[in-house]
Length: 409
Ligand SMILES: Cc1cc2nc3c(=O)[nH]c(=O)nc-3n(C[C@H](O)[C@H](O)[C@H](O)COP(=O)(O)OP(=O)(O)OC[C@H]3O[C@@H](n4cnc5c(N)ncnc54)[C@H](O)[C@@H]3O)c2cc1C
Image (cartoon, rainbow, N blue to C red; front, side, top):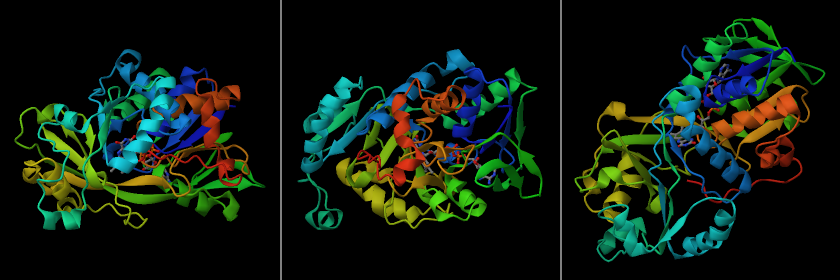
């Protein structure tokens, strides 16, 4: 294979590029990015959190591999990516906690370190945390519907990092090492992928330029589904990936001693937060958000769907105000509507099209695992390091072999 085209200059495209050469690829790669800079879409808009706590083996393996790769990133690629294993702390009501306890064996068997935490011990991780609800005004709780916490789950190997730095370094490092082989084309939006009798020939850019290649890798994040739709009419060939707005808010740290050392914490109503540079990053996935290319942050959503819950669970968090209009943003999940998991593998109907998209909110934490897997499949014909990646093939939608992940945020 002489020439590979990668569509998308985000962390998935970057990791694939890096791993292709690390695994011995000798040919050329052209990376096509529509923006004027790399890594400026979902990669840079993400919360930068990683965890290895999952209900499916493939996610667990992909993240276990990736966490290790990020840990060694500085040694391997010479750049500090702000990797910090601050831990993840999930908190649960009675019903959910029962299910979580059943998973403990699965994690133990697969080398994922976890600890079940008693409700009264949660404050040792998050100062000021109250697991009961007696202190919450009854009228207020009729609206919030918060319940007593039955227990927590702590993952000490989870944490946060800077995905933009990691992504940029994948590109920069590979370009520096293989200047004659790697071409990174910015301001180069792909209009459509070109096929002839279901065989991939290359791509056409919006300015009319045609670029031919032996293989096209579709890693265009939230835009992947629409790009394939524009490229091929047959609906059976489309992928179930849509853009879905998710918002993040940088807010003031509460005036509670020790709060700057809390893990990534997930509380009632799916609200999560972690410390970042003296502030807190707060998010919550809104199930009512319509699909579409919407990036607008909504401060009212923070007040009503997030901050009330924070303040009720951890008194003092009512003072966690949004720092400024610039410190909140919306970004797009590349949401897989069928089973909220990545789609990795050759397209089963379109020859020489490789899919690496649909990660539904867990793409940056899986990127190294995705990169090594894609490189192995393309160069060696099989997944060697993480065999379970086979489960994420496109055919699973037709064969009804969906990968249902139950631990999603
Ligand atoms: C608010 C938010 C919080 C998140 N938090 C986390 C988190 O904590 N942990 C985690 O693991 N994941 C998180 N995610 C998800 C994560 O950001 C994505 O899964 C990940 O960035 C996917 O990487 P990517 O390279 O596929 O996509 P992107 O980073 O979006 O890169 C795709 C690139 O393709 C380019 N492109 C698109 N269409 C074309 C075209 N036609 N031609 C040329 N170029 C094109 C885009 O400009 C973009 O640069 C979050 C996402 C959001 C929005």
